Length: 277
Image 1 (tube, helix red, strand yellow):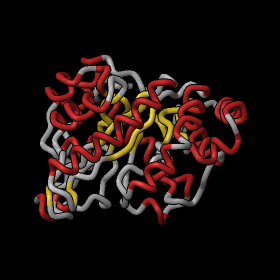
Image 2 (cartoon, helix red, strand yellow):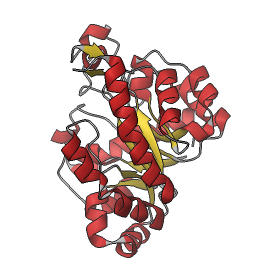
Image 3 (spheres, one colour):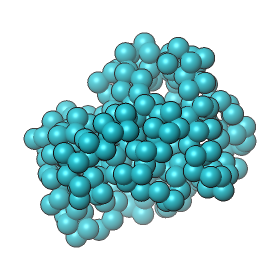
């Protein structure tokens, strides 16, 4: 598996292409690609940046806002083909986004809205050979944020993804996997082709009512069942990128070099302990 630097670890203190340099210096093998800056530089320059820093692309950020009004969605959608072509050209035909687990609309209405938009998205991505991963969000406070609960369990999100298009699967985040009550069996049942990208974060031992999405731990510091998680990924033959996505934990108060280093070390330790590295 390719251990990849996620931009959230930098807390907005560095952008592209410095991100690639920081990934290399911290010992990451890969880096997530912010599509906006990469588009400005072009595919050739982006490949040069990756090569110069000895890192591979893990996933390309998704440039379409699917969660707001129709005008915003259609505006962003018009630019998706260009972004998808960049992803293909740099050898990273993977994008991912998250689906809110509650909404102002009733579930049936929200499902139709999201399905209609994502089918358009997946149609464009498919023309460029790009896959899309959808992230389900497990914490209770997100599920209760709006009036109506939406999709938040792994099997249901996978079923929904398959309705969106044959190139649509899951962004599997260990944090949300844990808080949604998912299991290694869910990963195995999904299979390799269903997992587009993987995020890593650990969870404190707290009641669901006290869990906050922006207060996570480094891999290995909490109660996520890493053996079950990684053995399932190993069983299905997942070999693509895994990116630590840790909000909080005091990372923003550390020098960038220290924040990236301890994140890589923590992730690599649990991966090695569980046969994933």
